[in-house]
Image 1 (cartoon, rainbow, N blue to C red):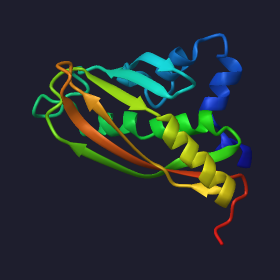
Image 2 (image 1 turned 180 degrees about the vertical axis):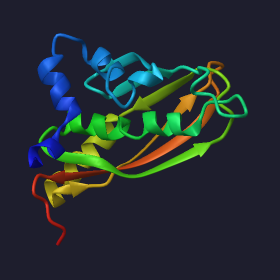
Image 3 (image 1 turned 60 degrees about the horizontal axis):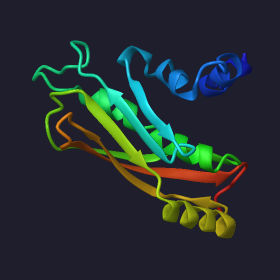
Length: 166
């Protein structure tokens, strides 16, 4: 019974849906497939991510804009997934997520995430020195006009496997 609770949908998809592109596997990920996302760019080993979140009758709130839960659900795992790709020997998770809704999401939204090389080098240095890092990533969801709709700040926890706080 204990094994049932350790199910990892990402590893399952890699093992059994490996014939699909990584973009398509993300689009079919159980947490997102009903949201009908479209991965438009997943380049440089997750250092540049672009995902379209469509505004549909299901995703609209009572005011006609994008429901905030949709935006937060899409934004939450992006930075940790990128860190897990770049730092594959470490455990990675979201430590804190802040979502600042600046404009109504009254069009399809595009999530834009970039992982700067300088930040990657700083994280690597912290991991070598302390065995852990808590980098802060800032990215956003943009309206089809190019205006920032939602600002996201994600603090990611990166730890060695078996890390215990001293």
